[in-house]
Amino acid sequence: MDLACLMRPRKLCLCKGVSRQDIAEAVAGGADTFRKLIDKTHATTGCGTCYHEIYAAFREEREKAAAQLTGQMGLKF
Image (cartoon, rainbow, N blue to C red; front, side, top):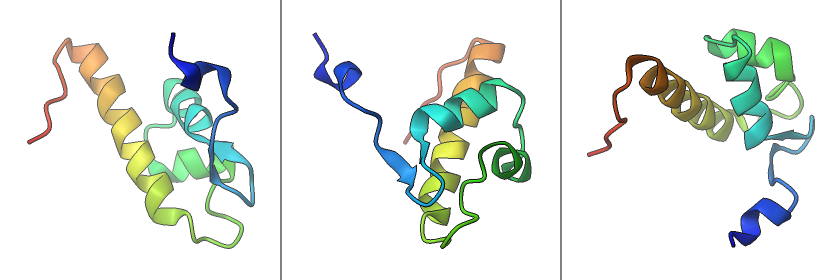
């Protein structure tokens, strides 16, 4: 059993309380640009120190969504 599923999700944006799951849900809900993600979640609009981590998570989630649509695996080299 994966214990991570029993734990509270770690917040990437502490000011607005945005977790990785929130980002995944926003991307699945149509946030296909970083601006749309910010509008949906309000991440990075507090102190802004989470910007790079939020952007990296957004890109990863967007790549996962694109891979599911195209049926291709996201390979990292």
